[in-house]
Length: 423
View 1 (cartoon, rainbow, N blue to C red):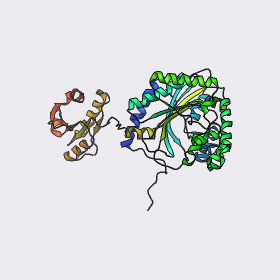
View 2: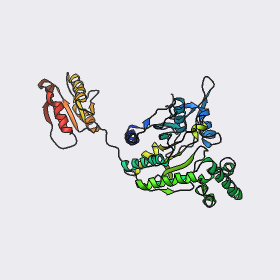
View 3: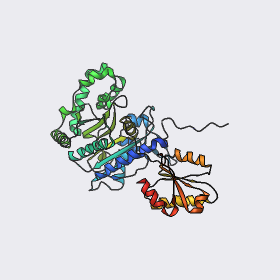
View 4: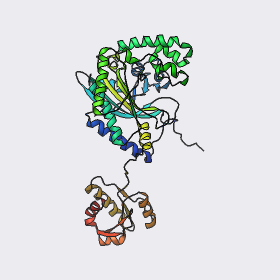
């Protein structure tokens, strides 16, 4: 006897009772983003592996350990996307979207990373990604943050803290890097294995360490804000003024960094401890060096990415509940010739009443079994069509969510009656 098929570990099915919440949240987020002038772009799941090696970096955990990479039949190395920004930039460059143009774009969909599955972290996970390309000032940085704050407000999500920082430009960051190397080299005997490796490759990543035994030495490390160039300091001050004007509260976190060289100036995260250990729900920042790193002209850009799984979990923790998408009416048909009439009535209701949700009894059954199905559908009303009703040109309307009695209405008046009752 063959065994049942198995799901791949860390790649989860989103079942109907959960997917309605996903769809509601995604629709709400899309509406907010598009109200700020951002337009959708749809990207392939597969890219050439070289794209991620060049953008993310060959010595990062993502590229070294976490990517799903394989050779296709032509012997070319392809990778399931581990994040969206690189693909977004590639698409813009491939299609000439960035040539003397400014773009405000969003995309959403699954990403893939091979890592240990745990709550809120999966091998196939979903992100919502927003990018603004060609905008240089702090105003667009502020808009992206304010837009995300509006999302939380609209969705009734609390228990979030906004953390911001500035990474300066490559030159000022190089000075900061030297200061970090000098500092951490002086306490090298207290660094763990990962941090010793990062000391040579990317010392900013040491500031990301979650090792509690290193907390005190990380806290005493030099601060990037002390090494900012004048233009970056002015940019950061401008961002803070704009957030203050919009009433968006924030905390300056000098330890908030990005480990990749193409990031510059603004970085930010919305973090929460409502899901257990503190973690980011939405992360963003400027990546003014990425387009040039991938072979294009120097092009400024900024964006954020949000994990859908974490958004759903936080929404539910904050008491959110997606609006019900149950049936409005359930049509039960009993007896000779009623099935054909029931199908016609269901389509007439769908034609005449905008957005009505009609569920038609399928597979026959007794009156009692059909009423059980009607009740399970959570419909507001059951429409009951029997042989007598068919002969009389009428149909029964039975309220399912109240104690009201069943009534009868002429078939010609059904649309008007149902419209009135549902309103």
